[in-house]
Image 1 (cartoon, rainbow, N blue to C red):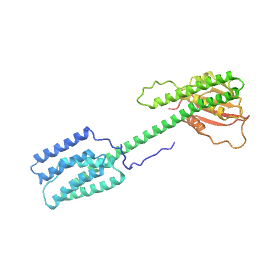
Image 2: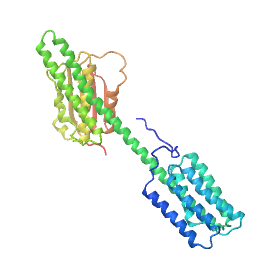
Image 3: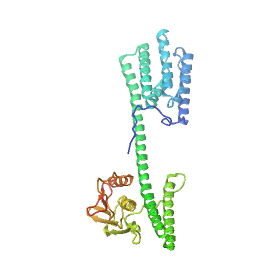
Image 4: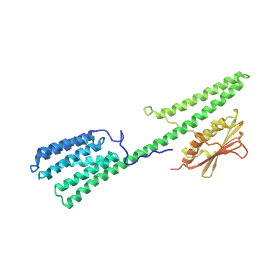
Length: 379
């Protein structure tokens, strides 16, 4: 499974930031009202009309701080820088409103939702504006230290929330990847088994159609039944994927259902042997054994040359359960062919449950698939 990981300082993409909501409008209203009231009740404030206009004009930037973190941060801190320049050049008194603390929220948004380049540019600009403001106000070392700690606190808080959100997105992608692989495995196991049975019945029908027409009718009925079961199982899987439709979940087949795979009158014949203790298994192990046996039988029917018999044996061995599927087909000399999607999916099933699976030519000919799984599924 290929997992795509994005860097913490990834480029922003649509959907990373939530849309503007009621809390954003409430935040804007609170800061706008605070700026207006503060500009009225503070008679010592120099350049009061200009400061009030700048503060009120800055507040709407809070609405777009997530989708446009760099422009809003630059606009907010540029207003603060303009007041520092006026204070420095005009030798005016205090030009700052406490409502200008909204700039800290814009700084948080810059680090939380901005891209790497935006964070570098924005924080550099903020550092220059803060240094200019401290110089203009002749701040002491205590004020410099306190102001720096406050800014770093907002930056660190934004970085923590950014990391947590990115980790959550990665975990969700991991879950979706695992679900996709599991669904592909289920589809392959189910559809391949039924389609292989249809193919075998069709081949038998071609043989008997000319000499035993009544047998051909039976073969066509078997094909119709198998095709109906295939469509029913595929529809149930598709229905699960459609969230708007209610789904009636049914338990997955297990070891006890392996007897339904037995075909004493078919070619090749399928014989099933179950140890009585193998039915008391953890549910994931029980379902996995059925799917492994089903896929092994499908491979034997499709690929075993001149096979006349397929044996499925399940037995309990202490804390493990062993599945063995053997056919008596002819094997070709030479290297073992590269495993296909079926064997890869079977190996994945066994490994996910802490077991193992082997497949290859048997010592006496034919093909042997053997899986060993723990009786208790791992946590």
